[in-house]
Image 1 (tube, helix red, strand yellow):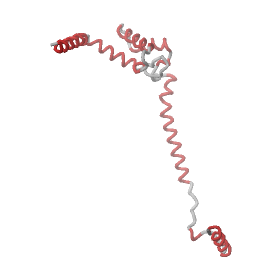
Image 2 (cartoon, helix red, strand yellow):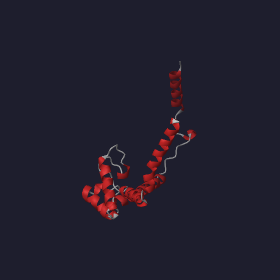
Image 3 (cartoon, helix red, strand yellow):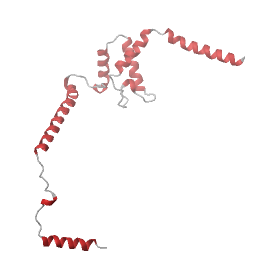
Image 4 (tube, one colour):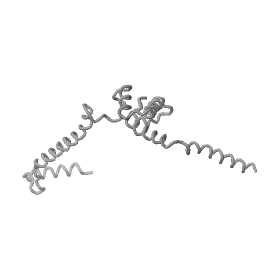
Length: 165
């Protein structure tokens, strides 16, 4: 009888715990998803060099306060641009997870492509120069330089003496 009561009590607790999830407005979940999307564009300012929504430090108060501020701004109806400007004014441009695609920051977007094309060009030029440079032909074994028979016999005798046991 006590086992049945324990199971009934656990079931009732599970139902009461699930009720707030069922009653929560749909807009609250969308707000959280939107906050995660916008938060993914910022860096956590605790020094971990991770994206704000992915900061995995246990008890990171910086990311918690930044996400709270982001949620409050979204709930008050601020636009994404206004929130971005607010974070940039508060933390500086280092808050960006990726540099903006305008102004001097555009260099960070363009240079990798430039480096790729320049590097490819250098590799092609080096290969073309190597192909133009024809290596000297190695003479076959029978057509080597002429050695007098006396020198050849002396070399064979020396090799024979040095290799004897």
